[in-house]
Image (tube, rainbow, N blue to C red; front, side):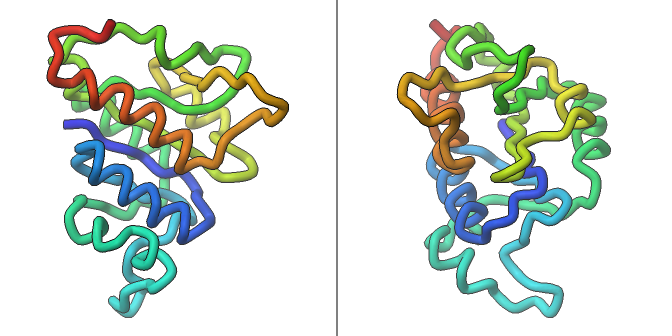
Length: 165
């Protein structure tokens, strides 16, 4: 089961987009950590900003709320998941360099972070690999939901193959 961990995502629009992309790519569960908004508020009301962008995907993709991203990642590692953080860092490698079998890919967690601050050193230290998207233009990064889509679809496309090329 491929899962995604959202660390301190601020924008409801981004979270809605992440739900929609997760649904399209076959991500089975989203872990909404820290300040990441959930599809419903504390009173059980649907958040219209999130729902507008997700187009109902939040009703089809399982999700859970957690305060601590580190604890979620520790639990996933204990359950045998490979943790891939999407972030630019000195330790990051292009996402296309990862070679996994179908079985390995089925127990993968993708971690994306805050739109401004990205992922913390505490979160990055729990990742098996830190992945980046090579940038060719003048901008150094992509929107978190766009970056997530690129990387997750790369892996999801190859889930039915024996091995990633």
